[in-house]
Image (cartoon, rainbow, N blue to C red; front, side, top):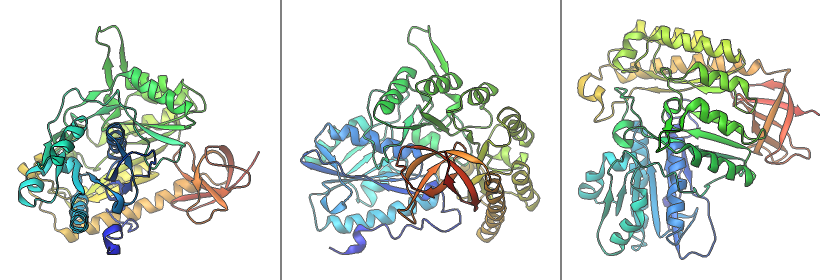
Length: 479
């Protein structure tokens, strides 16, 4: 078998450009070996929600007789869990499908399926035009996978991309894939009601629905019992989480859910993503301040620093509103609270002056980290229907590089603030460069590297930071 068919070398995961972002990340299933007859291989692309969904899929199919494998050559069922948020992500999946189908010719019994956002958006093309997959399954139809696989086993193609107003997978215990045994994702809601003009998520993941608060608390409690030390509460917009019991006697908003999870154990770190600037409340910020184990890190996507462009994006806030939210974060949580963002360069009709506004917002906030992209039109979005993608590619790339250059300065500056301070670090693994060093993160989500000594994965370690770069803190353990 040709080696390139089993590699991911075509993925560029290091370039400091728009592709060096979550939409360029890929994760492959880790192997489970429980003696089940069929083998499942999943590649997950894009965001943390996709990685979490792959864990749900693995749990559903585990009960149907599938172990997971990290070796495509051994797989009976290959699933690509896809992302449509950027054009680059779709191109990557298409390239990978060509590789896998070349391999499938050597193993005709292998089934190939596409899950997630591309499945919903490109179902007809995958099944009828290109005829390159056996299964196409949308984000709300994973419970139907066993029936769809049976259809394919019987010689038919399987497809279900229907969106749901109720599905949250609250009763499914995920199989933790690629887990370090320390950190885990918990999906608290699905879908999105924010119709940002550039975004496909409302069309591919449907309307917002919040998961039963008790099932979330139970999942977090079970993770603590299993030895996990950190959970990340996931949603397209966690601040709009709102759950009510069937009898109407119990109502839980995001601040209250955050507190309930924090109270499970003082040794459990709690993170969350993503916050929408229009929805993050002072109540959430005060809850974060009240509990030491809620990490002092907020991902607050701005997308642009200009109010006219924000209106075109249908972000429902303007520049002064965003600045006011940042000011409240600083007032309630202090200057050490880390803030990250998303920025889009070259959105439809953006002028040079409006681009300068985005640069000035980056100077105002001084983000710890940023995911930055140049605009790529996504079919089906409001922007694709109503706005002209009129900024030349070279201009987009130049503007993007200017944003990246600014962020490099502030990432280094924010990390330098940590030098000379002691940080409580949760050890996640060995350093990528040396088995003599350990790697973990502090409350602000900064990566900290230090000599391993007698410490191990899952330990909390006090580390005195002695030096820093734009991406990493270096230090020594102290008592």
